[in-house]
Amino acid sequence: MKFTLLALACFLLSFSGFAQVKTSEVSSHYRSEIQELSGKPSVQAAFAEIDRLNPQGLQELILLTEIPAPPFMETARGKKYQEMLEEAGGVQVWMDSIGNVLALRKGTVGERTVALDGHLDTVFPEGTDVKVKTKGDTLFAPGIGDNTRGLVVVLTVLRALEKAKIQTKDNILFVATVGEEGNGDLRGVKYLIDQGDVKIDSWISIDSDEPGGISNQGTGSIRYKVTVSGPGGHSWSDFGLVNPHHALGKMINYFSDAAAQFSEIAKTKTSFNVGKIGGGTSVNSIPFESWMEVDMRSEDDQSLSTMDSIFKVSMEKGLSEYNSNRKTSPVLTLQVERIGFRPSGKTPEQSPLVQRSMAAVQSFGIQPSLFIMSGNANWPISKGIPAVTLSWGGKGDNAHALDEWWLDEKGTDAIKLALLTVVAEAGLDN
View 1 (cartoon, one colour):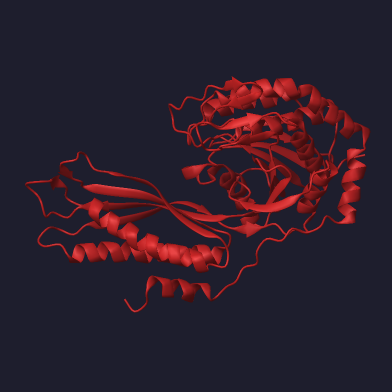
View 2 (cartoon, rainbow, N blue to C red):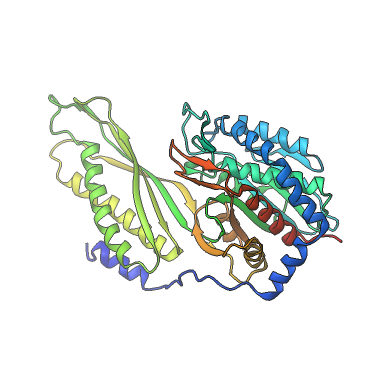
């Protein structure tokens, strides 16, 4: 090879730079807009309803958490959530062909549609114990925050709008998406934006535990499943036969070394991870197959593309070198399947949606901050649709872990903040 993997990385990276995120000030125009809106009697009535509904919301948080929603198996939770949206009234509710649950609240003008989203799925596989356990005021369960709490926020906003009889100029689409996590690969939001019946003009996700945090930029990611295949055989009688595990180890080693070097010189944070490995039938059998799943992320598409190139070169180099050292057995074969893609992108700090979100946070006496994350908002941002991700509120930690927990510490503030942002974006009809 003429170039080392690191040289290749530097060569590709040299074609593009990328600016780091900078938090901007909230303009006086949007501060005034939010201040005026939050003082409206109807909005104050909605805030009061959110407080009144809080005990019910906590019970529904437990109920929904205890309905398992593994990747690609969200239907049971989706059906229950559909019932809850229908009971709230004032909306047309349906489940689309891939399992997204949607509720359309029509505006007086209806030329635009603002989406408010929480995702149905969790990262936990089928059979995980999702029973909620209480210790004092703290709730413990896989998925109690991410993103079951987000679903409760979305539902409560709808109920409060209905109770306070708030009418907006634009339509509001309340969304519970499938496939946000892991190998779901954002399939719910991708379907809605690319193939859905409702044209979405603005997107607000509730999918963060950052108090006062607003994500206006999506971390890009590419994920692959790599499979190395061979004839397989007995560890003793077929000794010397090509071994997919041994080859995969060499491939991982090349990738890990080169990717680690590149991550140190990339202009934005760029990561890589071999998250799953499998294959083989027994300790005394040469496997006929070895596989792994790989995740690569970056804050900019150029760095992600460079990491992707390093990955592909490493796979081919490792396998080629292994095969070249075999004696008489057949060659191993390689299959690389892309199982996930999330483009990076950014909604500008000065856009109305980001400014309204920041002004809404500030109106609760919280210092707003902008941050980068990977989630449903990635897809609309990549399509030129303004999108942000807001907090589900309260206090919690250990998302994606079995001991995830959530505490109702000023949890209603996040719901009020979401309502305020949605109504500002959709336009209050006076």
